[in-house]
Length: 419
Image 1 (cartoon, rainbow, N blue to C red):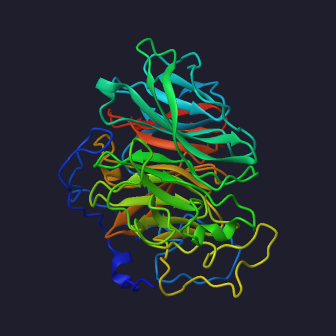
Image 2 (image 1 turned 90 degrees about the vertical axis):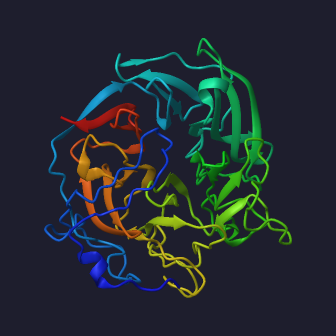
Image 3 (image 1 turned 120 degrees about the horizontal axis):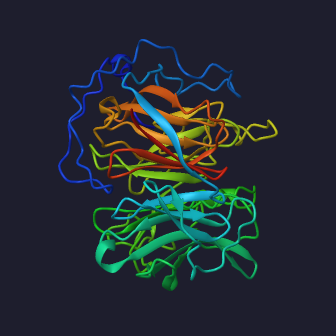
């Protein structure tokens, strides 16, 4: 069990961060936000609905933290609409966006011209049933020279499907992916339609972090705790799909050496904290118990042994149903009722100074973008953005121009930026 933190952490009135050196994946430098004052005691928690359970948090501030409100003027505008169930966004070097669509297509969107390109060919077939399809996407750090793209998808095979990782080269005319190749398959295969995970991003060593789901059903759920299964994990692999050097379970019995962390339910958000360099995730709980986690190599994040949620039909989970256990990591933060958290990003721009180093998470069933103010690896304030739009926000990224971009299940691309 992680130690409980002093209440004083959660009464802080500023969001002072020590900026680290080096650029982030979006090309902007982390900024020292010590001059940006955030009052995290002024507003009540943004969540006012009753929870699904009477479970108690492990420490103060783990849920329903005080609210915050952005004071700098900003605006949200629809850039384009008409995308087909967009899922993931990657920014090209010139500021255009390469976007995946669930049914198996990629398109380039120009936020300045407000245009949607034709479907890019050459992408392997996907299983788009249920929560499957073409999912997360990221560009090679050397994309400007090698034009390599990496993505995740639900791969249809005999006996069902699984989360897979593929790579290919975006052609010079941007009409096709050349030489598409599946480099990794998260086994075992399962005949289901749910919980694929699917986020993907590069670390500073040039390896790929990939999230997988535990496929939801009672029969597969225990595999989140099993190290000989790739289900319910965060993986770390090379660009050839091999286990990355230094992974925590390499050479340990029948454990899959590509596993970085385990005990996950369905991780759809991955991002690096620009101050510490740590990996964070957003994770779907069941009915209640959506989580934000600080991900460390070799750690067990508890699912399905511990959870702050219950089954959708109302039954408690586990025998006995528990929320804390020695050796299992506690979430940094959780929601009940749920946020349905999907893609996320840390803000490193300067357009809206008070957002410095805050975490932005797309909410699906909650129909808003959550802004979390973080200090010393704890959430000290929460705000709901774009809650008046009625949209399911699937992914959020920050562009090199300092604006936030978010796609919705309804096919819109939003730009959120200073006025």
